[in-house]
Structures are given as C-alpha cells and as structure tokens.
Amino acid sequence: MGKSEVWYCDEFHLDNCGDEQWDYDTQTFEEWQAFITAKYGPIKDFPIDEVLKYYLHKFFPAYPVYHDNFMIMV
Image 1 (cartoon, one colour):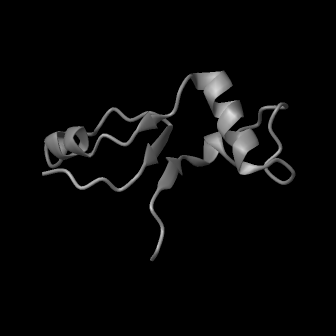
Image 2 (cartoon, rainbow, N blue to C red):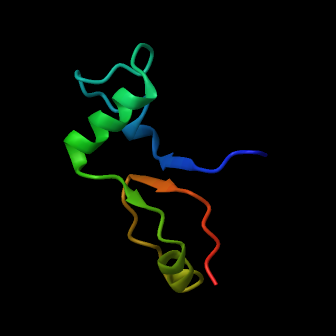
C-alpha cells in the first residue's frame, strides 16, 4: 500500500471525543497529535509483542492511541 506508518485510535480520541479543545472538522493531523499528547502524554508505539502474548488468552489492556511504523519483529 506504500505507507510506512499508521496511527490507531478509538473514535472517542478522534472525531467523537467531545472535548471543546478539539474540532475534527477543522484541525490538522499535527494539531490532533499535539492535542492527544497534551491530554494523555506521549503517543506510545504499538506493542505487537505484548498483543501477541495476550492473543487467545485474554484482552490486551490497550491505550486509546498508538503509533505503528510497521517494524517487523523477529
């Protein structure tokens, strides 16, 4: 697909967050990143190894926002 990274988040941290400091329709991606970082701290990298440890056993205790640069874990 030609992309090297993705930002995962649930709807309550993007277009349906209800925070008066965020307007999905008018603010930029960089403003969204700054808003999330100011509100919740630095955006964490997606922990694929941790997710796989939980797979089939229980739910992964996830954060609402992640960054993934598609690093292949070996």
